[in-house]
Length: 398
Image (cartoon, rainbow, N blue to C red; front, side):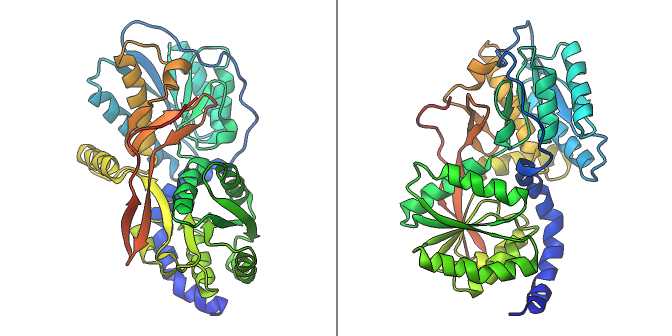
């Protein structure tokens, strides 16, 4: 098929997809945007003791120049308040601080929160903002539970709550290897996000039983993908690959590369596609021909559906995909406080973890996280969960 023909075939889907998928893509691409300096180690966020409810400062990107940030800010605050209400109101108190989505704004918000006696900082959203906040509170014992998923900023007094590329890749690679699809070729855009995704998959492969047979980059354009598709197919055949990891998302390159690689004979029973991002947002993506039969990871559908329904019942609309992170953060803080413990490194990194909106999750000593994920397959344009999310963790989490 010509590039012109492919463009005509996909443009209708892309127009529908961008609005919905941009919401979830925002969390995926946080791992590669606005890279800041290293977070200072500080005290390691040992925790601040206090009487009464735990004082939580919620940092949201209100007032940002980005057009969607005020919507995200409202959803984060709504979800956090829903969690506080679920705790009964006597466990956690919440104060909200706008960051304008900038490092300077985030620093000012963190300093104001410390002056007001905050014991935990929940947020901010962007990784450069989280770096700034981590540095601003590094001389204190206050932990920072950021909404980023960039593991590069984790450590010291900063944790990332967002589902990381490594976590998803471990789950998908482990499942694929157990199915005999243990020779995996990675494809990725040649931009920063694609490079980060490729490196994350390589790091995640150890211990999964999967072997990475190589990686092939492509320019993030229809012409660039079309030029790379034959090379990807040739590399797959030459290396005995039986699965191809697609790192793109539904609002950008995934519809194009899945289609073109399918036309090269990949993505079939011999070389299943694996996904690093959510393939079910928007739901129209489930109809993409190239994704049929492929595998991707997603949060445990049951608790996530329950959270979405409760949020919609309280606020009259479905939550932004990032809103669940705010709920999870408050829920974890509340679980610790409910046991009469101080919220700090020792209690935050308990191996058992916490019950979250998408299943169990735990924070690790290095500032990253583990999230229990399900694996789904697209069959006849429908999601079929082929490996349920585990309901507990095995092994050490710190």
